[in-house]
Amino acid sequence: MRLYRLVILWLVVWAGLDVVTGETNPRRTATTPNVILIVADDLGYGELGCYGQKQILTPNLDRLAAEGIRFTQAYAGNTVCAPSRCSLMTGLHSGHGRIRSNVQVPLTPEDFTLGDLAKRSGYQTAVFGKWAMGWEGSTGEPNRRGFGEWFGYLDQNHAHDYYPSFLWRNGQTWLLPGNQGGQRRDYAPDWFERAATNFIRINEDRPFLLYFPTIIPHANNEMGTNGMEVPTLGIYRDRPWPGPEKAKAAMISRLDATVGRLMEQLKARKIDEDTLILFTSDNGPHQEGGVDPAFFQSSGGLRGIKRDLYEGGIRVPLIARWPGKIRPGTTSDLPVAFWDILPTLAEVLQTNLPVKTDGISFATTLRGKPPTAAHEYFYWEFHEKGYQRAIRSGEWKAVRLAEGASIELYNLVNDPAEKNDLAAGHPEVVARLEKLMNDAALPWTPPEEKSPLRRKN
Image (cartoon, rainbow, N blue to C red; front, top):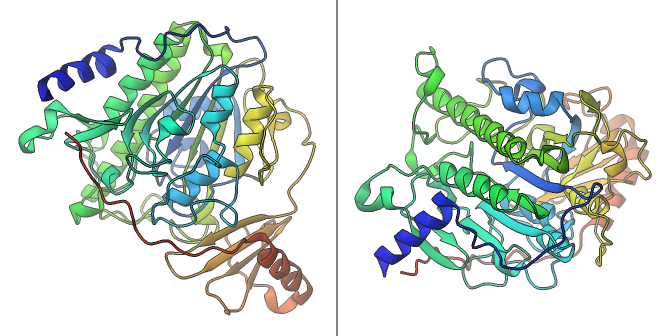
């Protein structure tokens, strides 16, 4: 049985046999594109060349920005993994979402997702990488939440390991042959790249949505002083840098190369102009695995990192490319957030959303037109350091670091690095944002951990 699974896995993921579907779906139209949504893991606002990075080379992502639109005020759904991804999938901010902390909670049938949106539009759907919204057998498995093809990690702790002995594929465990018996030959991100390029090839004549949540450049937290796992340091091998920084740079450049190969596949299949690519990150940069986020100025001059509700923890890169629809070389300072992506794609796919979300479509901005609506506020809450909250309304941002603590107030137009707390001089603004903050969050009880990593053979 184990040998049989290994053979099938090799055929399906490596060779890319068409097991996606036997159904006949309508061809895409000129106005409804394929969608590729790429989400990096712990990639900081300042870690791409097009966002000011000077030492890590990201030519393909820089080209993606040069050929599309780069957002300068885009926000993740949260400052840690699971609630941020929940916000992305369901269009709800972390005061309303099913998952509000990194303690895993599965999505349920009541949670309408990006996969459901694309599926009801006749699209082929797939996710390759890190899920973190439901363990095996739960209602949150990707195949139960609108994705026809699924290959990767269900549990975010499992996703720390870049050389796992197994991954999940469509509800079954699949052994990685090069990682058995203590070997470390199969680098999981490379498998995801192969699965993604095969999926594009298989579906070149059918509309598709590919969700690609890579694990790069998250650290393997169990590896100690150098948890930045990568097969080779490449061009950074001889740089006079600490080992973890070399490895992190190599990981980001490796992700950049993957983006380049996905773009090449689209052009080879002559569907480049029929495809909208979105690239972003799930939260700000980490300081795990031996890296120092100050070394590469990973937050791009913003205050804070992952697990902070300051800008450096939640402001992320967001790049969109759609030839013929998005004007090349565009930069937008429109504030947008993860919960805006679901309604945006609903408009792009010309499909009505059957659920209420916290998001507002920015599809008109993609097409170079003024936005049709604006957010009254953006809201985040974070539970790993206690009950921390932040809210942005217009130019003002309020941060409360603990329940009952004083509110800090920053003017993001004049002070994007949040250096000057203006709360004392603007009590009326503090009062208004505090009320919005309190009204934004529905009651929620932090769950107990109920998702031990299990393996079925």
